[in-house]
Image (tube, rainbow, N blue to C red; front, side):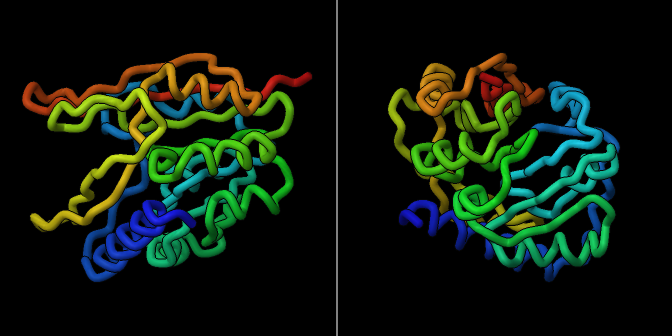
Length: 230
C-alpha cells in the first residue's frame, strides 16, 4: 500500500479506536446522505437494489450498508481499518444480507466475484484512483454501476486539483479539537471522468453537494457511472 494510503489507514484506525472509547450511539439512518446531512439526493440514486450483489467501499460504521441490505440487496461492506470494522461488527452482528469485511479495497476487488453495484460515501478519495479504478472496473459486472461521492472543495475553499495527486487534509476527532493527518485525491470532474473512461467506465452524471452554511465552503460531488454491457 502506498505511503499516503498507509497514513490514511493509520488515521482511520485511530479514529475508530477513539470512537470505540466514546459512549455515543449514532441512530440508524432515517435519511441517506452522501456526505452532508439534509443536502443532495438520497439512496434513490442507487436505483432498484433488491436481489443485487452490492459492494460498499470504505463502509465505516456500516449504517449505509445496513440500509441497503434492508432494501433486499446482498451487501458486502469493506473497510481497511480494523477498528472501524470492529465498530461495524459490534453494531450489526448477524444482520441479514450484510457481510462485513476488513480488507484493502483493491485486494478485495481482485479476489471477489464481480458486483452488480459498487458505491462509496466519501471514501474513494482516500485511495489513489490509479490503484483503485483498474481493480474496480474488473470487479464490476458489465452493465453494473459505480456511484460515489468525493470532496471537491474543502471548508477553507481549497478547490480540486487538475492533476492526479494527493494533498494533505485533516480529519477531526469527534468531540475534540484534535485533527489527524491524512491525504486525499481531490480532483476536478474532468479528471474523474477521464480516469473512469480510461478503465472502461462511462460517467452518467455529476451532482454538486454544497454545505448549507454561509461560512462553510465545503462542497462534494456525487458521480454516477456504469460499465457498458457490451
